[in-house]
Length: 64
Image (tube, rainbow, N blue to C red; front, side, top):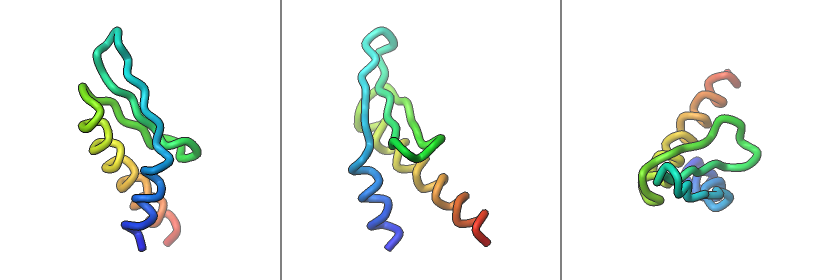
């Protein structure tokens, strides 16, 4: 169930290549604080999923 949520949220991710800095920026709209920056797109995706996972864990902890 959680894996499905993560997958669906990652489908909403938007990415931007920042040419000046030669980095990739990614975020998930609607989830404040869930963003990542990396030297390439694949690394950005991995870091974004990790940020999403951490965000979700924190939200679940607050709910207890």
